[in-house]
Image (tube, rainbow, N blue to C red; front, side, top):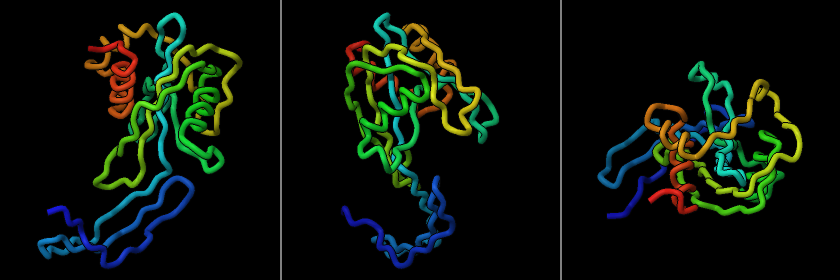
Length: 184
């Protein structure tokens, strides 16, 4: 049976520019009441797997407060209202975080990061022919973000040992490299 839960009541717990947290009262198709069921709404996210002409993958290293550590990641961020669509957001994020502009863009996937509790999607783009055109234009809170261009085999070899510590970034890398014919 494909019947979803019935929403009885919903109330906002927290709402700001980054997050909307709500508590839903729901009833399952079997009549079980689930209350409260917390749902987080974020703007959609963007990940860019950018490859340079000399076959290097662009990564950024930045501090992630919840984990209390620095992480190597693919460039990315949130879809802003002024972006209009996910590709514009991807182009903006790559340029802001790295100073690189890519010649070719391909949407690889639009997946839910965690459909059990999040309403947003993660859009992964493959950007090839990426070349540095200017310096970074970082947002507040991105101070200390550094750009790294690593050989693709080095990145792939490092995935299982935590070179990229963010699961959504690992999946973006693997999906994009597969689409680019770099993985079997």
